[in-house]
Image (cartoon, rainbow, N blue to C red; front, side):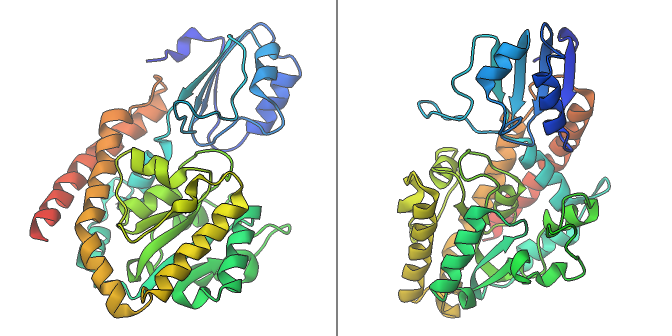
Length: 345
C-alpha cells in the first residue's frame, strides 16, 4: 500500500480542482518535490498537460487514476518518463455507486432492493440518459432520432429539453444541469423512476477516448439492466474480459472500431437489428428478460466480488479507507441478498 506520508505533497482530486493543481505544477511549484495524486474519480489530471511534461516539472509523480489500463493497449498516459508512476484503481465509482444506490445515510434502502427483485418484466427495449452535452452523446442522440429509434426506449437528453425526472432543474450559464448541486448529482447517480421498465441501459460514458467506467456503468450492472456502453473503444469487450455477462442477442461488433462515430453508428445498427427481429415487442422483451434474469444477478454479485477482492484503495488515505470500509459492509449484506434471490429464480 502506498503511504501518503512518504511524499512531499499529497493531493486528493475528487471534487474538482484538477485544472488549478495542474497550473501549479506548470508554474514550477513542485519542481523538486515528490507528489502523490489521488485522481481515481477521473481519467487524467488535465487534457492540457501531458504526463511526459509532468515528469519534467516535478521531482517524482505518482497518480492513482480511475482509468482502466489494458495490457498491450496504448493509452493517453504514454509516453512518460521514469519519474512518473501511474497506478490504476478503476473501482472508485463502483464503490461510490454501491453506497449511493443502496443506502441513505448509513442505512440500507430495502425499498430499492425490493423494487429490483419484485419488478415485472420490462416493456421498453432501452433507456438512455444524457445530461451534459458532449460530442459523442450528441452523435448518439442524432442517430437515435434519425433512425426513428427514440420511440423504442425512454430517453432523457437535457439539451433537447427531454429531462423527465429532472424538470425542476434549469440551465445555468449555458450549461445544462451543472455538477455543483449535490442533490442533483445524487439523483442522477440513482435509478430513475422508469428504470425497471427498461431492458437495456445505453450508457453514454464520460470519455470516448479513455477506458473509464463511471457510476453510469456500475449503476446499470447493480440495477440488473443489460449494459450497452457508448464510450471508449473496447468498453463493452473490456467489461466482458472482467467477467461480466451480456446476452447472446446483443451484438457489439462495433466496439473495437477506432473512431467514435463508427461506434455510435454500430450501436444504432444493433438497435435497428433488435427492432427488425421483433425486439421491441413487449412479449419479445419479456422473453429476453426471462433469459437475462439470472445473468443480471450474476453481474450484481460479480461487481461486489470485484469490490471486495480488488477494490481496496491502493493508499492509506483515512477518508477513502473509511468510505471503502462502509462499502465492504454493505456489499457483504447485498451479496447475501442477491444469492438468496438467485436461488429463488
